[in-house]
Every structure is written in C-alpha cells, then in structure tokens.
Length: 100
Image 1 (cartoon, rainbow, N blue to C red):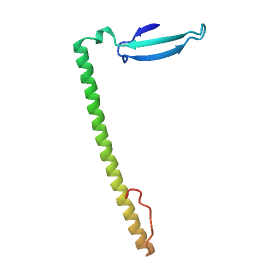
Image 2: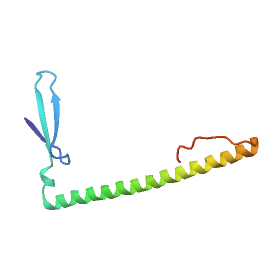
Image 3: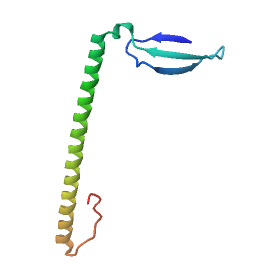
Image 4: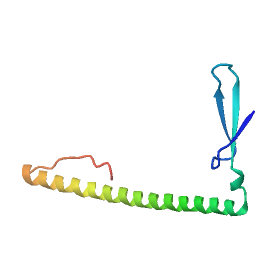
C-alpha cells in the first residue's frame, strides 16, 4: 500500500491505479496534510464549508427567482401574442400553456 499526502485532499478517498509494466494494482490513500490537523485548521475548514454553503443557498435563491420571473414573462408574452392573433384574425386560437 502506498500512501500520499497532498495537503488539501479529502480524507478517506481511495483511488485505484493500474501500473502498466508490472501489472500490480496500487491503492492510494489520500488524507489531510499534517499542517491541517490542528484545531485552528479544523475551524478554518468549517468556516470555509459554511461560506460555501451560504454561497450555494444564495445561488439557489437567485436562480429560483430568475426561473419564476422567466416563467411569468413567458406567460405574459404568450397572452400578448394570443391577443394580437385574436385582433388580427378575429378568431380565437387554442394554445398550449406549459406553465399553467
């Protein structure tokens, strides 16, 4: 078994590699660097994870607002087009509204 220390890699990740010449399979176990094993480093990592979670929540909220606005715009545009068609042709058309 070969163990490597890459600094910021995730603890407990395993990777299988196949050596081309001798055909043995090596198991690489990646862990945290010894510089990241203290309580201050642990707190810094937790703060980083919390910041990333807040960012993802903000992105989710912004994207859901954008989807809602785009849906309302599409519904309004569809009703406008239907009104114009009614005025031009003088007869109603049945359209499919996927957002209803």
